[in-house]
Length: 211
Image 1 (cartoon, rainbow, N blue to C red):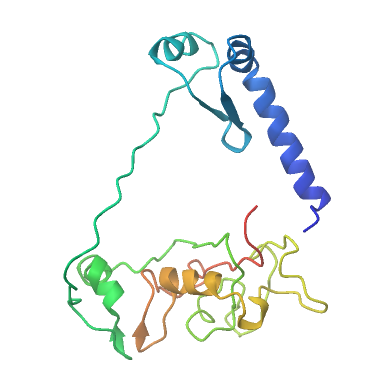
Image 2: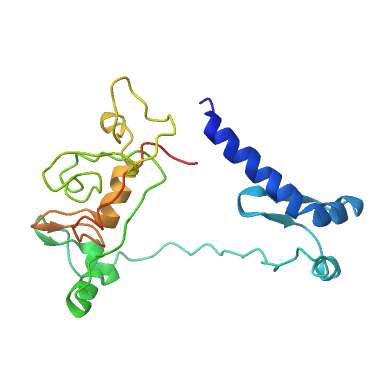
């Protein structure tokens, strides 16, 4: 997929800022022949070294902090199948909502995501889906659509004549599914964690995946 000029500017600007900010660090690591990987998007670097090297890096004026690599242990497979507290059902609260206690937040705190805008930067989203249509921020009160500032076109899901978010006609469903888990729902079936529906909480669908 070709990069658009705007994306190129983002990459070039980010790498230039990181190179300038990390000049001292990169010089130190290169001189000592230390293996490292610049992470320009977050203005950081992944470094393989010991405590003595970390102490020297900490003396650099641009130094902020060291974040050790986390060790993730794989859990053993469950020997028994645990039954969900609430089985999936057509109407009402779905089992995933009950499992994490989102429905208790709704009732105890009277909060369903009001005032929060949920976004998706992943696979494209079908804003016509029944569980998302009312939540899409680009849908006005009268039912008309305004996609301006409610989606980002990165040329993944561009189709001739298409001006709004899409999910390749149902072929790429991951983004639609993710937004459904976040904010999806109808009047009778709540599948999303934050299904509040008003102008400030509708989810802006994205037409493409990663930036």
